[in-house]
Length: 229
Image (cartoon, rainbow, N blue to C red):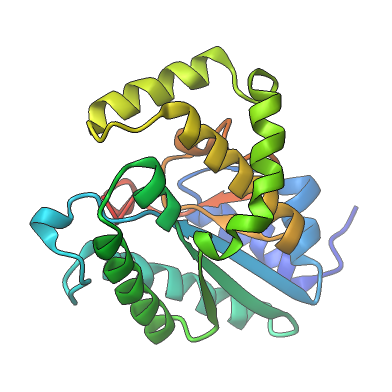
């Protein structure tokens, strides 16, 4: 079927093929449909800074976070230029619970980092909205409860093994099950509440299995992945 929406045609035939760093997830049945709407919501979750003892808790002008935000701002500019009839907003989610409750980082450090990040996000991407995951804590509990009760229906043995390896490598005394429950609950909540298109900052394989039905796009090069690490 011939694409009637010029902006979607540009995205699907020019921008996505030329800029993708990995294959999208739910491209045909969710991403393109959502791009056809008048209101388009992009979504990017952002982890806490784990090497804060080395880099500090405040983002500086030459930090990797700034490079990534500049890159994302250029994506938004291209979207707005080639989809002038759309109202495009971008939700950034600071994953504070992962830092404090899951990976035992100091609350003060996590708070300082995300306060700094919010400032930089709004400076570089004025169309953005910044939230902390803890702001949705109560609303997300029903999804956590669902996943806890049906854990092995959501989590494969291989995914659990991978989470266990990651937790051991990080050496923060975290429970890999808690991490997986949190990731799945976040994905379910965000998908239900906002119906966004996720622009991921990590390798696709790190999202597979934990992002539930969130449609995802991958544009960042390897050197820009996980700026909070």
